[in-house]
Amino acid sequence: FAKNGQIPVRDDTRMPRPAGEEAPVSAFVFDLGKVAAKPVSRYLMVAYDDEYSITFFRRKLRPYWRRSGMTADQLLQTADRDYAKLQKRCRDFDTELMADLTRVGGKEYAWIAALAYRQALAGQKLVADANGQPLSFSKENFSNGCIATVDVIYPASPQLLLLSPTLVKASLVPLLQYSVSPRWKWPFAPHDLGTYPVANGQVYGGGERTEDNQMPVEESGNMLLMLAALAKSEGNADFVAPYWPKITQWAEYLADKGFDPESQLSTDDFAGHLAHNVNLSAKAIEALGAYAYLSDLRGDKTSAAKYRKTAEDFAARWVKEGDSSDHYRLAFDKPESWSQKYNLVWDRILGLNLFPESVVDKEMAYYRTKMNKYGLPLDNRAGYTKLDWTIWTATLSTNKSDFTSLVTPVYDYLNATPDRVPMNDWHETREPKKMSGFQARTVVGGVFIKMLDDPATWQKWVKRDKNTARGWAPIPEPPTVTTVVPSAQEKGITWRYTTAMPSANWFQPGFDDSKWKTGEAGFGTGGTPGAVVRTEWNSADIWIRREFTMPEGKFDNLQLYLHHDEDTEIYINGVLAARMAGFTGNYDFTALTPEGRAALKPGKNAIAIHCHQTGGGQYIDAGLSTVKE
Image (spheres, rainbow, N blue to C red):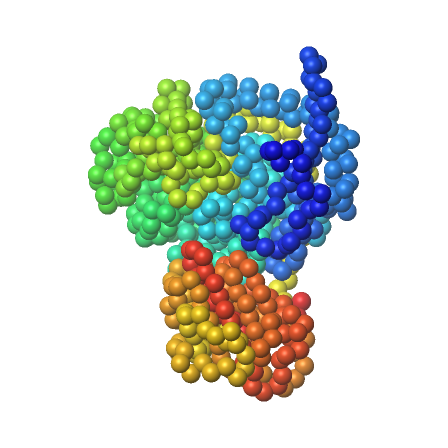
């Protein structure tokens, strides 16, 4: 193309195929003719068309723009027809928002927010539920791929709270519905809804099975704070009514466990478990104050007074027990430690006023002594920081100089970094280098937190959200599942396996696998979401085989009950029964090919599986179940 300006006559339609295998590009050629003093312009329209976007508890949901039956052709035609009008609306919006950002936080802050704006929205998928109401699902990009992660929505929420409380509701409804369902049995809030784009239930940590590696204080506090901020933006707590008993349970949990958290993960889980986390304690205290605020809006003065007093008592203890003379600690039992106390930002924004101003003054003065060229480290454990939390920490102070002292190094990092990647939210502060992953994530919407600290500006933008979403469809009923051939999710099952490439007929029923090793499924590495590892597999490939007995009978809608990480191919009696790319975050159902289903017979059968791994966690196990919707 660079030589002659020509593009191929025919499209390269070989799909599906790996992205790195001569991946085609979208290319357009147009002639601007002779361009003289008068400008000549053309525009291209590029759209992403998906029939279905998200699976929400086994129900496929269409993108929101398709909710009334619009097609991709109609979408493009409408955009073309309204091009001039849309351009003007966009320009006017940009001009006004940039003016407000600059007025509230300064020029450098405004440019940081401008860089974050599109990325924060683009990482969320807006779909319509069965009633046509909006649901929004974020993807945890470049960290673990979870969908609707509470501690990703929490840092991203300021942008939505400012510009569209409706999108806050659309993000929280799926989690609230899941939390009140029989599926979620814990007294604290969930972490996620699955692995994007499949929202069939939590996969992080112990998932729905155990409390292992959960984030109980973190996520419960996040939910309460977001719900209170939503109520603050709207001036009422009507939204929480259907979920109030569950929300109350979260507040009770924080009152019991929140002040001095046990060794558990927080949103900064890359730093590992930490007991007695002072910043996490601050979140719990602010969340209890938020619950008192919600109770008051609902007219429950008794509960409001009770939880307000608990929050006040905890705050007084926090100031005393977390004090290290010139700063407050990272952990209550580590006097020399320190950390950013970004969770305190809600104290003024929500009007809770649980902590004396001297706490912020002391912290901000101490932070100035810990600054590096490209930012304030997250805490004393390492030199890295989180971009979103730094802006929250800067917003703690009403002093413009304090705010600027933290924001300017963030601006400098974004300007100086040689890493040509989407906006990164986890970076080094001594040099302008990103940490591994953590790019293109919605959490950068958190930089809009400063705008919420200006009540008049917040309300000005909130009032423009005219969407009256209500009447969301209930969470889909779970299917009736009957196990026909068990997986190893509950009990170990013996397979033959090898990690060395076998001969070409390895999947045939009569193949001699007597020289293969013997081990109990599942096969994989510890820490893989949803995995029940009984035999370690940490190489690039594994081949597994076993015989099983298929009972007599008619089995309607028989499906594989499969957990694969990553690419897998499954054969039944030598016939390809399924081929899956990528990975799941938990056990889920996968349709058999018609040929694979036909190959099954009563009595003895053979199943053979190959799983290929490229990076991260890995796991393979399978069974067969009937699924009645």
